[in-house]
Image (cartoon, rainbow, N blue to C red):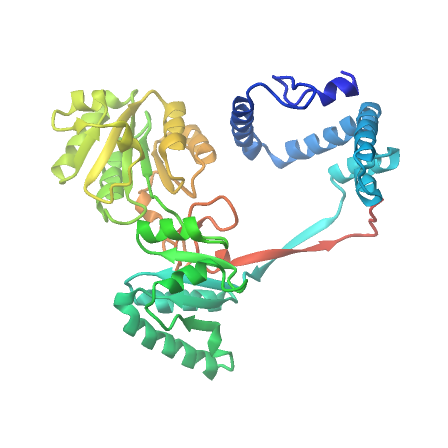
Length: 423
């Protein structure tokens, strides 16, 4: 392809017009996003050696394509000059053989040794509701991780939280540290939450909400600073074809019913059709006899007359109640696809004696916590050996899963070389 033709192609599927526009931009961008998501799952599973091989091959391809790249750059430069762009802009845009060689070298592994060390985030604002113990838990976690804390308690625990915060301040000052490292917002005024979410003039580095869905939704919607939180805990248990029935029964009952109001409670049970004849009815019956309503697909209702019909909304619902959705799936691929479509990326579990199936599930389910042969109710920092936690985070950036001392830190890089210089 000539450089001029390359300029007119914005997708491997669809050419643009002379003005760079495409007939159906929404379709083009939607397809781009879907392809990127599909590729991301493959890249995530690729070993480091394969990724390094790709970097070397990419650098080689850049060098091999020097002529068309520089020809395209010449056209871009001509257009920029015709548009009257200033010299500094032209210089940033310019590629020549030397600069292109440097681009290729930057892609290749360079032999430097990188060391990542933890650093505090800075100021962490924790907004919580009724439980006064969060005052001490959050203050201690922030201090332990080297951060300052601004705590906003719920109005119903305001007096208790105030006294606890006073004790924390006393301890800080007794150790020669500033009492302002742990501050409780000294008012019940709800507008204080809005002020925190705006960042307090750039002084808040991250916000952590601890409370109900409405609080978390507001924080995630209104915050102008990063948030560590999860909105829904739509957790799944997948009973694979190779699951042992007695184990599956104990795990499912515990995952759903140990504590129905926690974010790690299972909300959907997926049963592999290969074991449905032996496992589906006993599992559904055990749930119903334990006082849990079951909303199932057609096969679930056929296996257990007391199961109600599930709607499309049930697959995406966090009940926080004695209710569970149940569906029969064709196998591991369908189970993974269902969880990726309807799940909230919080906690999901597989029950199976098949190590290969478990390995695929653990690798391909993109949730903060993924378990094999264990209850989803282990979604707790204390159970992970992290000690106290400040919450569970389901975002893909930085902290994920239980947010404890380690997750309340960022990092910086120390780079060790032996004379490398950039060309």
